[in-house]
Image 1 (cartoon, rainbow, N blue to C red):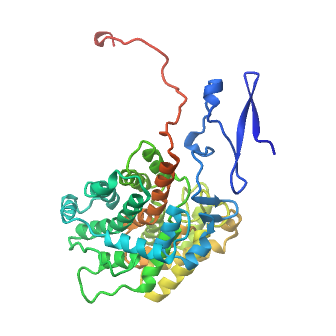
Image 2 (image 1 turned 180 degrees about the vertical axis):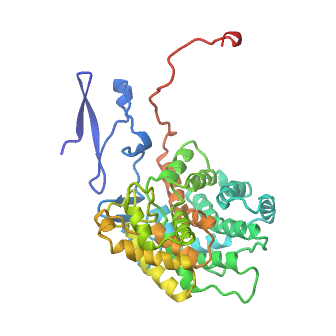
Image 3 (image 1 turned 30 degrees about the vertical axis):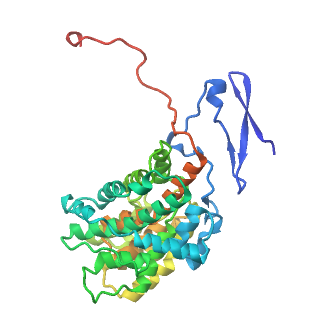
Amino acid sequence: MTDKAKLELNGKPIEVPVIVGTEDEHAIDISELRAKTGFITLDDGYGNTGSCKSAITYIDGEKGILRYRGIPIEQLAAKSSFLETAWLVIWGELPTRAQLDGFTALVLENARLHENLLRHFESFPANGHPMAELSAMINTVSCYELDIMNGEDAKNIESAAARLLGKVCTIAAASYNAAQGKPIIQPDPALGYADNFLQMMFSQGRKDYRVDHEVAAALDLIFVLHADHEQNCSTSTVRMVASSGANLFASCAAGVCALWGPLHGGANAAVLDQLESIHKSGVTVKDYIARAKDKTSGVRLMGFGHRVYKNYDPRAKIIKATADRILDKLHINDPLLDIARELEAAALADSYFKDRSLYPNVDFYSGIIMRAIGIPVNMFTVMFAIGRMPGWIAHWKELHDQKSRIYRPRQVYIGKPIRDYVAMESR
């Protein structure tokens, strides 16, 4: 295999390097193409452009493979916790017992919000979107973390990562409670990560409230499955912002804004919107499936298929069993969840969807689980952001460690050619 690729531009041969990744991925390095030839490449939406070299996550969409730092997602889902996975994603290796215990304590000890920060929630309207509040509050929190904002040593980054991971849950729960006109609950360092979030969300200060550990484990699994997903829109945004030298909090707040877009982070909410629509319309699942198969109907089956995974989303295989278990355990009488199960069974049994690899994806099952445990639909993307935080932190750290130059894509200008200014009276 040659380590050079040959291009021909205007009759002139050009050699460019070929980069080979760990998993035999091949890329043509055109970093110096413009300097040597005056040409740039055009790839609308970056669908075929590698923006960086990264050692964090590997995906093979055709084979349904997802690995964090080389470890298959199936193994992490079965054996790891969210905070252990976070350490792996951020620092590249599984932690020792001492490292995990120390990091867990650091996260939980720093989850509490400064009392002055709590007043900010009073200024948000009750119908404000929690993603807007999450992004705003992550930036606001940084004003109270000046001791770690400017340090670049490993200990400082560990402290910043722990504070961000801890406080993002508290911000999310506080946003929910404030919108409900209910008291904001501060975290309990004695509880686990997911347990703490559920306690802050739903206890309302009741001393008799007890977190169901199986429910907490399901939420922890959702976080694990979302911890990173390579160079998606929000992660690329974090790296773009970080390349300017922006701090971790500002970069991750930008990631929240990118994730907020319905084409990125809104997929699991779209699943519930679809179930609500089916329920309100009174259409049968059989008829809805028929409409989804009719290309002229405009109906899409939300939560099925995936842009990256051309076979089966490996995360969906893992989370399906948890969704079944949680629904059976909670015995919830919810017509939307009944429709979800019926829709899943119908689609999985239909050759139209199987032949096109339109299997239920992770958004389908995570939406069902969150609905079952009482998390409102407008909080779904917030849950996604909590889970994705380790990946954003890891990519910020990787770019920082690589001492990357500022990102600056090129463009092909298609506007007006040069022309003269026209005085107002002559227009």
